[in-house]
Length: 109
Image: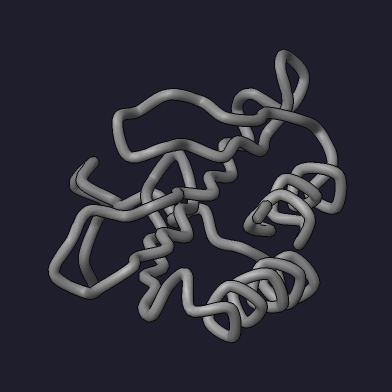
């Protein structure tokens, strides 16, 4: 029988099914519009990250992060630009994802 050596790993933070469904709907719209072609999901000890890429070999265009430790402060959710700037932050994922509404990406002639 093995004892606890103190090196037990923390359970990583992940997206639950409704959260991931909402994020993937937005990602699907971005793929259909040609704005992106790849994504990555990371479950870390303190956050879950959904990265959206234009191409797989580049830096992510956007990162959608869930940080439960910030839930009571500025909100558990944020969208981060490639340079690290926080584009939007909030408590509600649905409101946060409105950042990607179609009207934001229309080309004006």
